[in-house]
Image 1 (cartoon, rainbow, N blue to C red):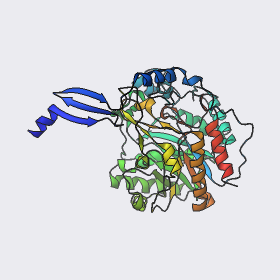
Image 2 (image 1 turned 180 degrees about the horizontal axis):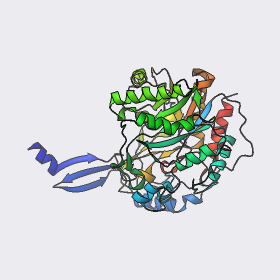
Image 3 (image 1 turned 30 degrees about the vertical axis):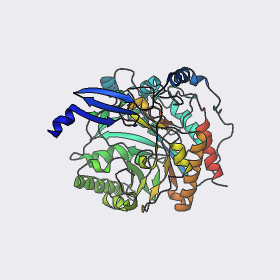
Image 4 (image 1 turned 120 degrees about the vertical axis):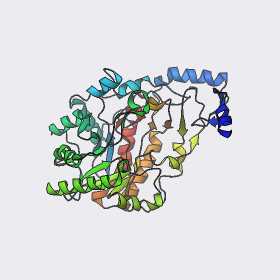
Length: 430
């Protein structure tokens, strides 16, 4: 009887707690609790139509190049998706890339910075290495040490591999790098936000251990590939996605093959996750045979942020806005943990409304000023905590445009986030 009544009548709240949703006799009624006025709507309309004209916070390219005076190595995550490949054409249509999602986005509330429009290299295509040359020039100019390339591998099937294959072949691209194996199921998230529709399943089959190392060894043997104590660095995004015994077999085998090829094994990392007990994270290192954890913010750290009740104008929006300013002011990134090796991370901005506006978007607005404070603090922390060969800080990201996370220049702030990165490095070395 209770279940029957619940089906007839129930009350829930939207993800951002702005709307109260009532289900009555199978019908959905949505009530706006923030009471948006006609004046609010007029203000929003003016902002949505005209905010891209505001260049008051635009910072031009610096004429000064960062001089390497810091032992801390900044790694920025790099998305290779910006090119045509068969699977994208098949699933999402010819010409689809992350630029499709990025350019269609609109502000969800007054003051919401969207869309993010790239300048300098513009809406680029990674079919050739010409764009990468400029990206590397920019990155090094402002103090980025290396890129962490996302790597998509499914039992021997590779996706979006062309840019990194081109990178490997072009030795003039003088940029240290390593791989972030995004070992999760491939879904329709990028095209229409359907995370539950699996296109490629992530699994480990017989012989995949050897296949994986056959594919990745040419990169690990490259002189640009980042190594710690003669161990090529490799991020495994989801250690828990496989049956545990199969995972351990895989780890043992790839370490064995690495040693057979002259390395001391593989330096394995995974991001710290929300479900991990930060005070018992050493258990994770030991269980999954890892060398380190790292912060892949905001993932795994959402519990450190509080929400803002923004006046969202789109009634179909399903998401939340988080208070990054308070997070940085309170230095909430310094939390208690027993982890013997945890690398810090930060983001310039993080906002995935371009991908997930209608199914759980998260908006983390930030400014170059606050980003600089955050980055400078964790650079200093890293220098105090680790020896020079393990002083890494991770920035999310270089070019995750559909998640609003990019150091690459844009039409609102210009080169401000790159300039803030350079200044954080330089000032932390004084």
